Length: 146
Image (tube, rainbow, N blue to C red; front, side, top):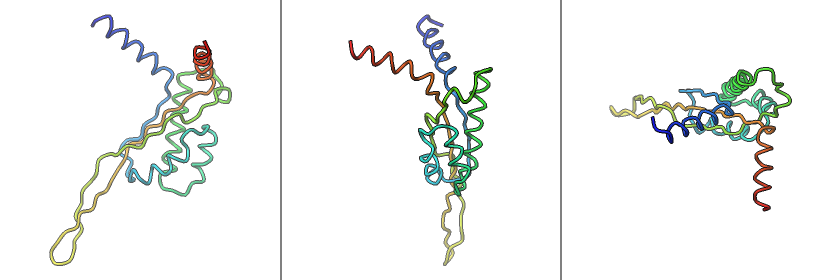
C-alpha cells in the first residue's frame, strides 16, 4: 500500500473514533412514516430525544428509541470512565434510507391482481458531542478573523 493511501486510511480511522453510530437494517415500516419520527429528534439532545420518542404514538418511535440507546452504549464503549452528563450528546445525524421492498399480489375483480409493495427501511443514527465540537468551532472563528 502506498504512503498516500495509508495516510488517508489512518485519517479515516481517526475520524471514526469520534463517531458514535448505530444502525437498524430492514425495519418493516415504510421510510416515509419513519422519516416523520426522525425529523422530530434530528439535532436534539439525547435526553430530550429519548423523552420525545418515549411518548410518541407512532410505530417507529420505540425502534428509534432503542437505536438511540444503542448509539449511547457505543459512545460509552469508546469513552470508558467519561460521564454521560458532561459530554452533552446530541443526535448529529439521523438518516432513513429505503430498504428492500417485498412485492405481493392481492386479488382484484375480473381475474386481475393488484400489486402490494411492503416497504422497509434502514435507519442510521450518528451522535455527536457538543463538548468535543466546541474547540473546533473556536479555531475556525480565529482563522476567519485573521
